[in-house]
Image (cartoon, rainbow over all chains, first blue to last red; front, side):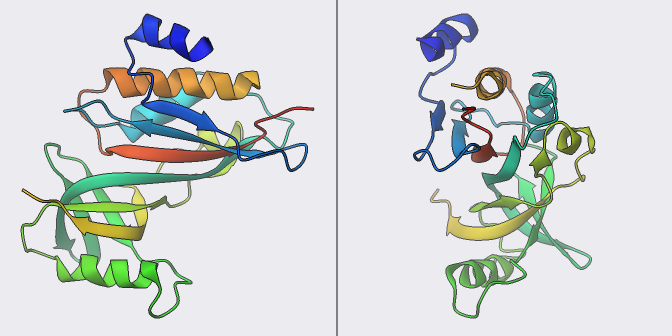
Length: 162
Length: 37
């Protein structure tokens, strides 16, 4: 009912925001909120930060953000020592990094190798991974200004078919 | 559902509906404190 109300109020595709909780495990359970930009649009992480801040989440509990994983599409380029994802249709970028503890031959390690092989190829690629450093208890983690550009720890990679 | 999580969902709904330019196609936030007993 609540999700339907939001959809009416904000003209939201109510399938674009989904909350799931994989069962009770304790007082503070983990849950996931999956979101997706509407067709032709992209989710702005700065606005996401502002939006979560605007909920005025209070402290004094163990409630917080465990991690944020995103999928972004763009072109891989080198900028000095950095590997950068230039977002299609935007001036925004991400710095791409490999997982520090990825084992040789792991999916993460292979994905990052493939990303490096795309430097300067001009291909549109889809990168999925965790946003580095955006975690912690409310509201402290929200008071920190996010790094700019943000860094994605690459977990999955694929080429976008034309 | 805990009101904190409901607040997040509202925020995310707004973002999903109104952002004309951004960076990401989709995402998954993992949060804790989802259920207060």
